Length: 317
Image (cartoon, rainbow, N blue to C red; front, side, top):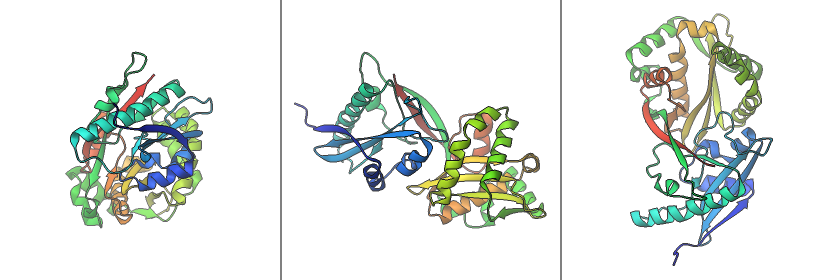
């Protein structure tokens, strides 16, 4: 006889927000306010076990009511709730029952189910053991890079934690007149983002993402993170920026862009150090670069002392 009594139902965003805030660990990209700003429509599902909330799961839909992953999001998936069973067997059995019940309902409701794990989530077995219509979920390994112990980053001397090349570039930026700017307008953010993607032959992608970019700008203005911009002291024109979302004491680098002049000077270590200092000041315990899946980008992020972390994108269709 099944020892678990799992029920799954739709809930409203306000209930989801209250449960998200109570969770010990959750991706900032599953914060209901953030997700609603980035997604055309969000369906929130709650699994309870014996009447106690066990997991919430957001499902994002595009304007055609197709399941999607919104622009600029990572680790979009279920949020575990409540205390974990101290017994390894108990944790496994409960995870299987709760996750399988959720997947069963979602597979009946949508054409496909997409989700991601948090970095370092140790056990994929409950997901991979699910079977419906002869099909199992497929898991794709992904990588990110993050820096822990942000309390090491308090001032300009903290560049000591970068590699030798980045330290030299940081010192050169100081001598070259690089400065933090007090603000950057939305128009300039959009302009720099478009320039950066156009430089990589992705101008069409930039145009498709402008609405999401505007939403993120508004989110950080309302307190869900911050945006830092840099330029040169002689003209004070914003030439580079990075937009960071913060949730559950984690700083997540979401968008970075710069103009050709800033890139040619190789002054980005100046911005990166200030991002780490600001993240520490915002009480974040770690800084996630959000993605380290190519050789060049990974090498760049590890040059600042970031460690690799694995997560998984999963789907059932």
